[in-house]
Length: 236
Image (cartoon, rainbow, N blue to C red; front, top):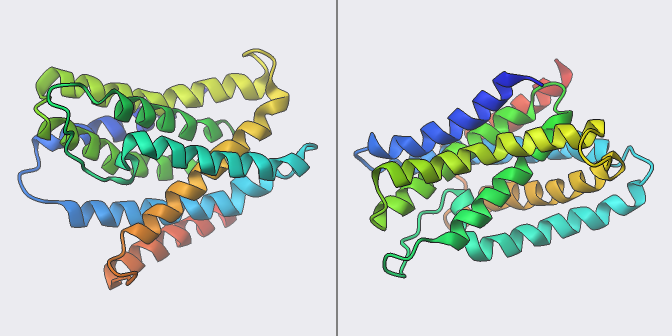
């Protein structure tokens, strides 16, 4: 177990959310660039590494079904999260009622994203997930702040979200080595679900952040940089 991975996963999300107290101007352009980079990086890592590894097992003929299930599951989650995991900021319109649906779906999403890290032997995926959670945590904090949830409660919510990916990593370690429930034979199927989620998240980020389906120069550079780093990590 590598504690530095837990720390990177937690503090990237927590500091990304806590930054809401420091930002005095609109940083949406910067957040979109971070999203574009992380989306391209996650997509490349998924295609280059996660999918081939998932299909290398003895149950490879069923992996495609689980990938589709993961893709559709993320579609369902977004009915409750309203796209906060993509960096979308929405005002909640139900008075002082806490947005439990958004919080639960976002935490479940982060937990599942931490699952493949048990097989992240070259430490490629952890940086993409960490970068992806910075704008997601910022969007969550901004949504809470706009709906008058401030101070300690806001930081607690951001902290819970930040803890979910490290928790998913910890659980996936137990599943992969058989120390949790002896279900290691199902690990590739679980990875299939996560791959489907990653494919949905990464492609949605890449397509929806373009205005009129046009990619500006800065976004293209961010996308190419994300893909290039993923390719370089696989070779070096």
